[in-house]
Amino acid sequence: MRKSGIGWFIGVGLVAMLLAIDNLIYTCTRNNGEKYAQQYIDESEYVTLHIPEGKGVTYEPNYITTGVVMNSAEILRTDSIRFYDSSYRKYFCVLVIEKKRRNMVRQSMIVVNDIRYRKTIKARINKYELNSPRYGSKENPVPVLDFDYKIAHFQNDKNSKYYEYAFSRPAYYKRAVELYLTYMMSKEEFKERYGGK
Image 1 (cartoon, rainbow, N blue to C red):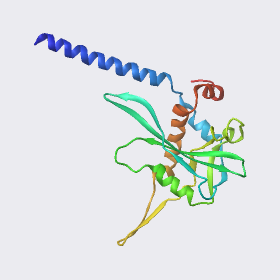
Image 2 (image 1 turned 135 degrees about the vertical axis):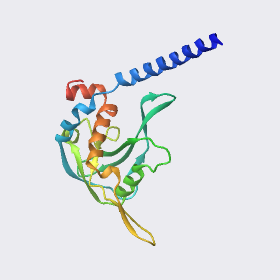
Image 3 (image 1 turned 60 degrees about the vertical axis):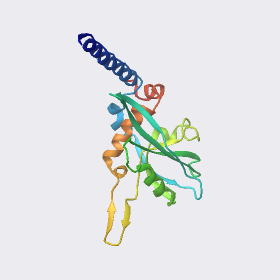
Image 4 (image 1 turned 45 degrees about the horizontal axis):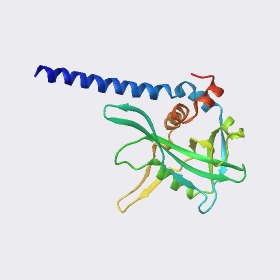
């Protein structure tokens, strides 16, 4: 009985150590996005983007693992809605970044439907990313983390309601910038633009 108790403690200790190592790896590979989020926002401006008609808007669901908690991983959804704006001659990508939750409608599905039925959006874009030749290709589109999202309107037999989704809130935009800088921007570019951590 005593030997099995010691084995249990050793097993728990090994699991805890492996979790700590996994989280250390995830921590070492991320940028300090929270520190520079406000600077990124302050260096952004509103521009009008033109949405192509037909099949010019593509949607791609993605995930990023950000850490490990007990027996499950912490995962972010980083869905992208990509299109080409002929006036800027660049590709743009609306990023919907949110924590993965079970049995929840992805906000990106609602956002992509909003974009597909419009001719233009007023987007807030970082000036560096808008003007840099590094951004705008199909492989590396200009990221869009905020735009004049139309609040959805639903109507049924009993009543008519407007629903505000998180994507349309200023707090969501700031958090999206933090997550984008922390997990999506390469360490090399982050260091070049913000001087490291």
